[in-house]
Image (tube, rainbow, N blue to C red; front, side):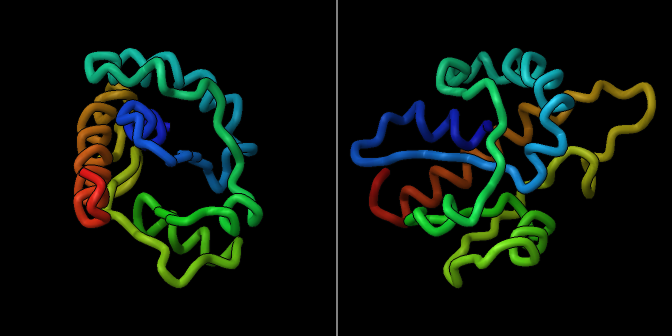
Length: 136
């Protein structure tokens, strides 16, 4: 959701942005409860109006129609390659998600303490990708 919101906010010509989750359907209710908190944390970046308000489930058809496919990290990539036929040029970033690596939430912690840090990593990766593609 954050990557899609940021990239849409750039208003690039001839660019359609779609984000999907490998377990979006399974965690639909949980994600719906988290969304207002996440949007509040990224509001200062001016991208909340570009964020969709529901998660979309990743499908093979979405993958097949994409020009560029990105997995946020190796955990996501491994899951995608198990579930789908992924393009050989799939881009795999190193964005640590909540409850992975150094972003583990302990009891009593703010569940949303890593949102801004994660957003900034995603935006940085997008900016680098656009630079590599000669867009930025």
